[in-house]
Amino acid sequence: MKKEDFEKINIFGTGKPNDAYAEYFIGNSFLNFLMEPGASSVFLANVTFEPRCRNNWHIHHADKGGGQILICTAGEGWYQEEGKEAVSLKPGMVIVISPEMKHWHGAKADSWFSHIAIEVPGENCSNEWCEPVTDEEYNKL
Image 1 (tube, rainbow, N blue to C red):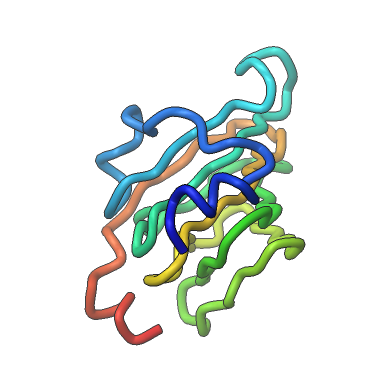
Image 2 (cartoon, rainbow, N blue to C red; image 1 turned 135 degrees about the vertical axis):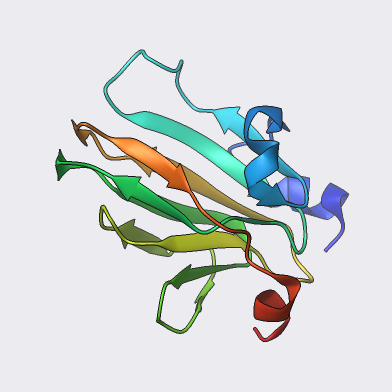
């Protein structure tokens, strides 16, 4: 899918290059805040991945509560938890990620992909970025 065609269906908008977190992604990602950061205890943004783009393995830590929710909105992507098979993502799917679960998510090789990322409030929340998803791992999907 061409970016121009994807933009027509990406209803929450691609946003700006995700430069602040670029070191934790393979490929280019984009971030469109859906509410002003800090305006609520919930972080809400549309994250867009170019084809083959994915984030590193990572863990959302929390002493209580926490985790992340992904609402898939456009294109097709992948989600994988450590030790499990990858899940094919399509618009309308919702992924609930428990705190302390090592995982990654990103676009399929032939598709742009967007999801809304919701950071679940909790106590002592932090994000640990781990190793990249290698081309070898990714190419098996």
